[in-house]
Length: 352
Image (cartoon, rainbow, N blue to C red; front, side):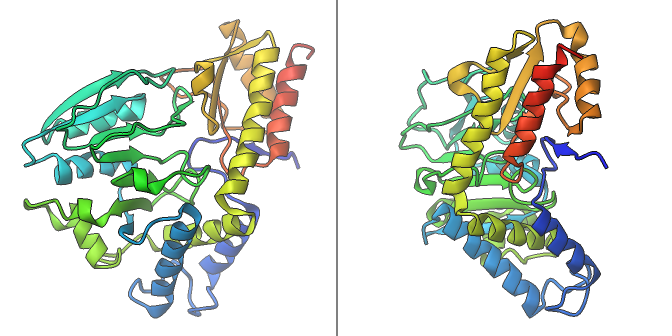
């Protein structure tokens, strides 16, 4: 059987041991004697899962005690409106947004439903750095990794304004200082597990600033005060995330993942820069470690290369529909050998 190499941008590749354990638990989770799909979210067994998952997040990211770790639903896209509903609406202030690409634009669109938004800078193939965040902003919002054009923020602005960051596609791939942020959010389906769960890490004093009415299902404090169990949570997604974070911890944690991810990205970028058939889309200082975007010099050959790569087991390298070309997502669970296989495809394509 042809070996498949999964470069999909999300849902992401998951480690084989995690898939194996999750598959067994779908049939029968020994701890409960039932399928993990049918256990009660109020059961002691699942409450242990929630607690262990929270503890793993705290340990792997060094989350301070005065921050809450929450497991929500609705994906990162729900956070686009939830952030503004909580912290912009009723504040009498303007929110500052960095437009770093497609998902930054979506966040801005939703925030404008709840108040004034100022775009302090915009850049899709690079990360803007020459901008000023107004000191009286309700908050500053940024997206740490642009999965569409393939750029990544390697440093964050120092400001007295609360910083909110969408880290959906690079969380757990590198070390970040959680203390720099008032709130971090991330969809699970990149480096954590299957879609369904959204991780939120928030400073409690920031959450407590909210002094207007917010619907219970969109109020961070409600989830905090109910241990993420205000309503039925995405049980399976949280369980699979727990398994995946265990796997990450056993491999050496975020520090190990960062070194491995940098090596994978370097291997692929070296081929893009060496091979005259291809060129990278993102400006070099801002190239993402997680999502490598590239095109062919002769765009008429891209469909042929896609077919050639697919015949050798490459999956998920078609570029996003608004950008075209190719995108290879190098999430934590993707082996170095898979990147080498893609590089081999690129280097041999001209001779086929």
